[in-house]
Length: 183
Image (tube, rainbow, N blue to C red):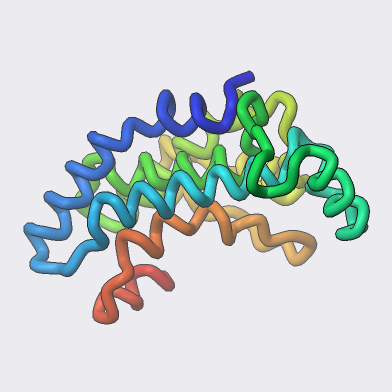
């Protein structure tokens, strides 16, 4: 199992992603967040996730007081060492979304199929993480090799979609691109 830092850098290849995003935004005359802002958003999201997840110990702990006490025992936020801590299933999917966004695609359907493919592939990296039943069920329904294989049945029991969508916000952060982001 890879640590948060190793996972982000090995799986994510910031240089390639930034290059692709900058090319995309330049060709469409959009204002793009700086590469430092983009990197910081992605890394801090993963680090925050690893911290909140604490290798699965804190994700489902409903006592903020207990978490704060343990955090103090670990040195507090200023001295905590998260080296070796893993990211949760949310960040695995977050990175899979980002990888799809910077891949070669021309239509929205091509992008969605790439995201579906990346999500299916990401299921092999879930050991030691806690993907929810909705995530597992939805990924099982994905058929990236088929037209519109990204559609899955609606499940009212869970919506583990927010964190994996962070890269979409970075790509479509421009006001006139909001309709694409929402779709």
